[in-house]
Image 1 (cartoon, one colour):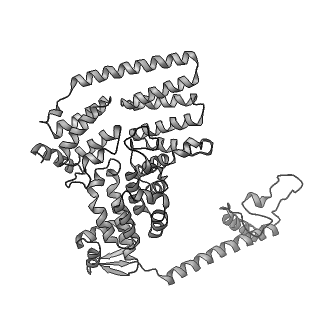
Image 2 (spheres, rainbow, N blue to C red):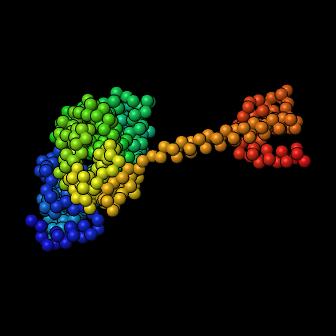
Image 3 (cartoon, one colour):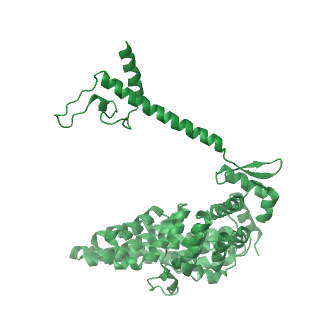
Amino acid sequence: MTTGVEYTYFTRARQAGRPVVEDLPKSDLEQYIANYRGKTRVDRLLLIGTTAPLLAPEALRAAVSEAKQGRDVGRYDAVLAAVREILPGDINAVPDSAWVDRTNRQVKAESDRLETELKGYKNNLIKESIRMGYDDLGQHFHRTGDLVNSVKAYGRMRDFCTTASHVVIMSLRLINVSIDQGNWLAVQTNVQKLRSPGQLSTEAQQMTAKLSAAMGLALLASGNFREAAQEFVEADPRMTQARLDDPSDAEAFNEVMTPNDIAVYGGLCALASMDRNELQKQVLENGKFRTYLELEPHIRRAITFFVSSKYSACLNILESYRSDYLLDIHLQRHLGELYFRIRSKAIQQYFIPFSRVSFDALASAFDTDEHTIEQELTSMIKRKHLDARIDLVDRVLLSRTANVRSDLHENALRTAKEYERTAHLRILRMEMLNAGLEVSDKGKPGANTMLENVGLDPYHGGASTGSWLSEGIGRSLRSGLRG
């Protein structure tokens, strides 16, 4: 149960527009966090602790314990600041100065040792040793939270990579650091480098699942939901066989995300950006992605309901998992937009067969009230997601019917104007020829006629596409000839 101080913190969070999750998620916190390893455990626990009042004490205490198992003092300070604000009376709110001092000394000693070894490798001019020295230094900086120097170390490592496997290792290291930095452009750049034909080695082919997951995550973070969905649904299913509790398993990517996350991210992005035919062919009938969907059967059911036009059932499933998704470090910022697009698509598909639908019928079909559906329809029309009109008197939604006769008249006038312009340019050419204004010297290579210089083709029956002066020239010539 939360205290008055905790309620004060979360009240301020609501006032600031930050999400606050009042309901408990469906997954158990301890079981959920056990699927991850590395720094993402601390980040995810910190997000849960600062978003869910009911889970805040357990999550923040676990975050403090997790942070002290590593060497990233900066992350520990961030967690400690949250504990002080939310749980000021908790024992974990007191900083462990002894641990901080000891860790800082160990980090400095390790940095000095690795830099000294690297200098020795450089003096010996052994490329493989220098590459390994930079690799060790980059990993050390990454573990201690010095992401800028980690990127620099991996960047300098590039010149000493002698095989394709070395390039793959370096690029994957850079991808992981860039994800921690939130530098999504760098993530996409490194993935594209590994996918380029020159770098498509056996090692890179074995990492296709990680590359698809990283690229999909970068596109999701950038708001490109359709491209993100295409990356996730094409992820190699080999990641589902990875042993998440074994850090040596090369297929595991749970320092960033798990196979369950791929199923959720891919399913939501697909629902938000693909139509029903695409969902059927590219998602439900996709053998690769089906393996991931088996890990999250509720996502598969939601997609199946959407394809079957059972929109209310689909939306109810997604709504029941809203609390879980709001506690996801990569989904939270985009969940509102994703849910809005999915709901908008459902309303669009529902409305297609009708010329008019009452607010009451829409509210009943989507399990909501008339006031809410009116706000949703207004927002959809303003954002051009729905081509319709709202009649607030009769409280109905009206489709915009196309005026066939008006469209036919507009097309006829457009065709007539184009014909008139072409005829005018042909007459202009004939008048210029009759006036003897064509100066041709076919003996000199590259010579142009005067007609070509004004944008006309003297050897064909029309004007070249760049002639924007032709009509003015024609009027001037005709005036001169008549004079």
